Amino acid sequence: MDKTISCEFNIDTACVEVKYADSSMISADYTLVEAEVVRNMYESSELEWLVYNAPVDYMNLLLYRDGR
Image 1 (cartoon, rainbow, N blue to C red):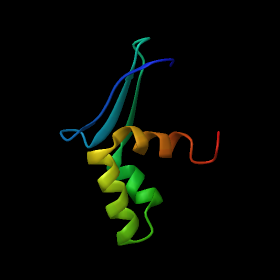
Image 2 (cartoon, rainbow, N blue to C red):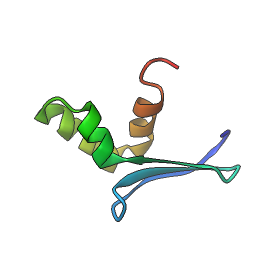
Image 3 (tube, helix red, strand yellow):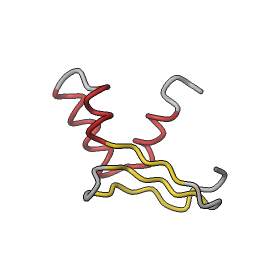
């Protein structure tokens, strides 16, 4: 998972999909993430904004939220 080719929100599946140069892919289901993470309407709207406007930042938040 060296180089990211694309990162976008797929509205048909409600998933943010990241594709890498080595043909691997990560997909995060937005509805499942929201159900686990969101505690109030403000967090929900912030996550929704990220999904549509900055999907790379959304995935970085999910993948590296504990500093890993």
